[in-house]
Length: 190
Ligand SMILES: [Zn+2]
Image (cartoon, rainbow, N blue to C red):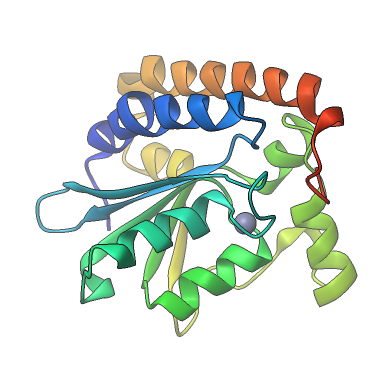
């Protein structure tokens, strides 16, 4: 389990968010992910949403594709970090890839209400008959964690609140840009 969230939040601020800005400027959604080696917390790969090229190129999928391009072997040696709680497509991709964990910053309800993307929850209800995104958080394949809940459990929220607030603000700005421009894109579920 991750205990040093300072470094994780710094990867958001210094690596994922700058990459996401480039992607959103091209017309993509705001979502992204990155993969960290457990032993030294080094950043191994990043991915951002690229739905303007292919609607299944979610941030998590891009991170996984980039990861395997580098031929890394034992997936149990890595933490998978997602900006937003992964959709059903990405839950499956993380599972099939062999990760034993993932962490996310924003939960489904934020994706729906704050960021105006309701598809994750709708797909789970419509296709899988799962209400409120209530998949099994701890199962035979992986354990999933909310970054904010973990920071609270470690009693580090106050210490990290400036970084947390900055990340929230950055994503709200990205979302504003995406929402204002999305009517001209061809993403099926935009
Ligand atoms: Zn997804």
